[in-house]
Image (cartoon, rainbow over all chains, first blue to last red; front, side):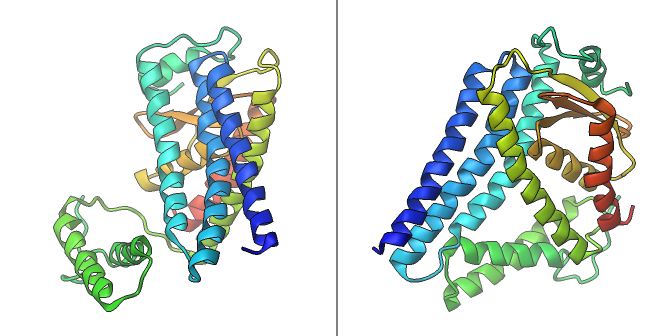
Amino acid sequence: MEFWIELVVSAFLILGSIFVFVGSLGLAKLPDFYTRLHGPTKATTLGMGCLLIASMIFVTYQQGYLSVHELLITLFLLITAPVTAHMLAKTAMHHELEILDKTSNKALSQRARERMSP
Amino acid sequence: MKTKPRFRLLPMPLHSLILFVVWLLLNNTVAPGHLLLGAFLAIGIPLLTSGMQDAQPGFRKPLATLRYVFMVIGDIIAANFEVAKLVVGSSKKLSPAFIAVPLNIEHELPITILASTVSLTPGTVSAEVSEDKKWLYVHVLNLTDKDELIASIKHRYERPLMEIFEC
């Protein structure tokens, strides 16, 4: 394999892993459930994107034809990530999970749980 | 509300096309066998499922849709850097908040797309929609200016969506 392809692939792999790591770090260290949601839903999208681009370049070069599976994975990720986050947030509100004290407008979660206007 | 199909054999032409393309992408091929199987699935599945469909406003402006998709991808990249910075930094400095965003768009599909976009972009996760579909509840990781954030969601994401769906 040519050097520059290896270089590009490894650059994307490293960048992607950094983002996935930061997402997981957020899940572990942020203070309450709602803030924790932010890490995995976002940092992971770009992290996975980078890993998939790396995979696409690598496989395309090795097999000699364009590999498009990765585009599908990206599409499914983009559709499922926000839905998962939404359902998790909704569940958290119904279980009345503890909300960080300094969260402003805490009362809104009460209204949101009942699906009323604020 | 039931939709009346325009063609009896192809009740959902757009869905059929997407199914067909996704099938070929999944198999990474354009071999005749897969073309045939893909066509069979693309015609068969919509025939079975079209009865369950609710009427939704369609994508009226393909160009505006494309522009919206690219803008959101750009924002996702920016969002990732922003959230990464917030996560790595001290969590004592965060000021999380709940906000309620008033919605002007109607219909389930555009609201779903708006909520998903909000979840994917800078430091916001959509948590709930009010029963009358007039308010979107959003959890913000680090709120600086509430009014500015609401205005930016409405201006940046809701307006193009209204234009795309013409509602």
